[in-house]
Amino acid sequence: MNMKAPRGTVDLLPTNTKKWQYVENHIKGVCERFRYDEVRTPLFEHTEVFQRSVGDSTDIVQKEMYTFEDRGGRSLTLRPEGTASVVRAFVENKLFGNPSQPVKLYYFAQMFRYERPQKGRMRQLNQFGVEVLGSANPAIDAEVIDLAMTCYKELGLRSLKLVINSLGDQESRENHRKALVEHFSPHKDELCSDCQTRLTQNPLRILDCKKDRDHPSMKTAPSILDYLNNESKKYFEQVKEYLDLMKIPYEVDKNLVRGLDYYNHTAFEIMSEAEGFGAITTLAGGGRYNGLVEELGGPDIPGIGFGMGLERLIMALEAEKKEIEIDDELDCYFVAVGDEAEKQAVRLVHELREGGVQVDRDYLDRKMKAQFKAADRLKARFVIVLGEDELTKEIVNVKDMTTGEQLEIPITQLINKMNEKLQGGK
Image (cartoon, rainbow, N blue to C red; front, side, top):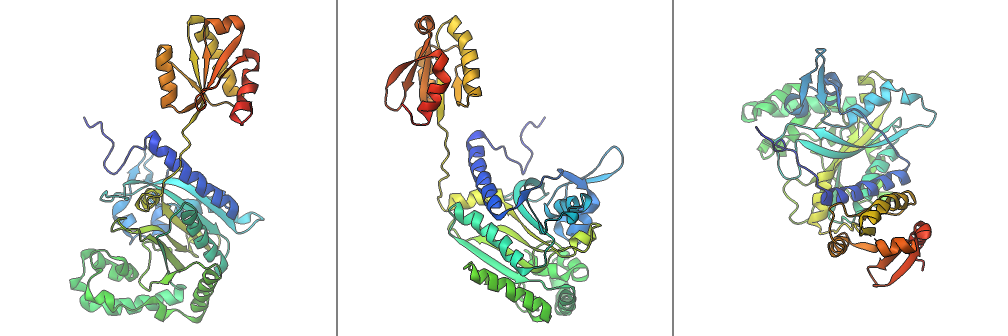
């Protein structure tokens, strides 16, 4: 019997989840400033959603998806990436009919990919993503990149590199595809088995191969930038101009193709250059996907988005030695001594919480000294003591654990007085 977490998954314990919550809340704040709204989609979808959108020739569909058949004989797949699910929800719920366009969405979601687990790349991974649907304006491409860079920079990351490329429109991609087939065909037998298949299915994916990246033919492969038509060139130039206006530095990488079939025009990745971060430097990646909405049964509506790995974000913060300040102090710890005080503690703790006060208490029947030690471990700002004498006087003793000051407070005034003390009053 194996009672351990499955390979490629980890438990996030309370110390770590507080860091994650801090990061997630920060990102949500950025999204609010950019006026993006949260969307939540199912953990699994009908398999064809990913087959049609991500592409049959991709590694995700061919090798990495967790697919199963339910009792009704339907093929379902645990979500391997976020864009297809969001676009499916956009189409199914007819968000293209909203009067406010474009529709700007973000999500936090768990993804599932059957990969070889390694640092920063798990089989169950957590991702933040953004999707904008309804605009073909290059300014929105620049805004999406700006949002991603803002999330990183405001969390304190400095060792960042933004890499961009254009995959062009359908005409440009088709001309580039023909050139790639002609270029790689003489070397077919020297390429890995995956790339031999890609040569006929999707030759652009050869440029993204990890096994053959050092093959001599890679260095001389035709660049998509040489096959962009005038419209695609103009679009790419506008994206770069907007990034320049926002003073967001970038590098153009002609070999950046991204791993999914639905991308066209703008493609980008954000990488960490922090010392000791590791061999896999990509933090986030995304791009434009103008035909995807139509592919999933909707109207011809353009889109752009990105996915950001949260595990890798936490790793980058650690590599740059950025401390996440977690407020783990406790407002009040309630110490009860005696049977009657124990009963009253149940009521008073409940009322304090109802009144907006953060409070904890002992549930192990410990002595008073041990309860004070527990208050210290929990970094309590105040300790409220209720014993037989206090019950007789209908008061509680409150000790300020920072100054050592003690005062008596009538039980009937406890909630108001504690709120005053916690807000800096006397």
